[in-house]
Amino acid sequence: MPQSNPDPAPFLAAPASSPGLFPNTRWSVVLSAGDTSVLGSAQALDNLCRVYWRPIYAYVRRRGYGPADAEDLTQAFFEHFLERKLLTVVDRQRGRFRTFLLHACEYFLAKEWRDARRLKRGGGQEVFSLDMVAGEEWYQREPANERTPERLYEREWALALLDLVMDRLRQEWAAAGKENLFQTLQAFLCGERKSITCAQAAFKLGMSEGAIRTAVHRLRQRYGEILRTEVAQTLSRPEDLEDELRHLLAVL
Image 1 (tube, rainbow, N blue to C red):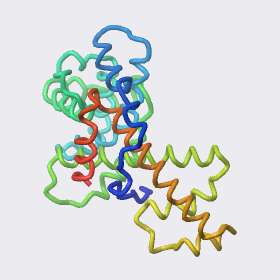
Image 2 (cartoon, helix red, strand yellow; image 1 turned 90 degrees about the vertical axis):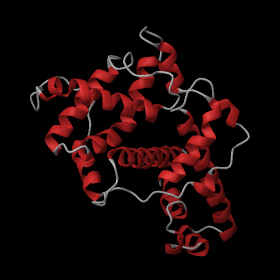
Image 3 (spheres, rainbow, N blue to C red; image 1 turned 30 degrees about the horizontal axis):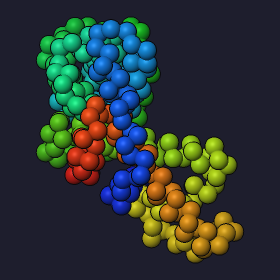
């Protein structure tokens, strides 16, 4: 089940350490690699694609392909992309990974879809495992409206990014032995503030209300830091960060 996502707007104040987000982002490493083998570039590209396969699947589905064909095409697209076959045919000067990936997919569907459809379902070697069942469930929950494939792609990109941020935050608190605290306080991130008050959380956890308020503040602050870092990882230029954050808010 998709989880509730926070409204990121209250969490986007730039932390003092924000300049340190650059220049060694995942996407800048990939772009600097070009067609040569550069240490870390393949892993950086793989990490990006693992996060953003769902927006591509939604885009292909909205282009009119059924679930089976969309699954094959999505898998084939990432196979070609991760093998760098598409890094040489689209404009690598685009500074945003989401834009680059969408243009690469457009190119793939226009020029190579016939070959991709020859893949036998269940055959071939997957470059990594994609949870297509979950992807189709997400797609079916999208309203049947006039949203274009491109706008749906960007919405799924934003939601996938917020899911990643929440997962990272959950892992950090669990590693610190605060998983139960996180499970309770995440309601203060997910637009569910009316479902629990600080006083109720304090009673439930056996803490003072002041301690809860401090924990909520730190949780929200850390959420914003992770969000900024993850967005930065998809950019090649530091000056694009604020615009990209604003775009994410507009998409949502």
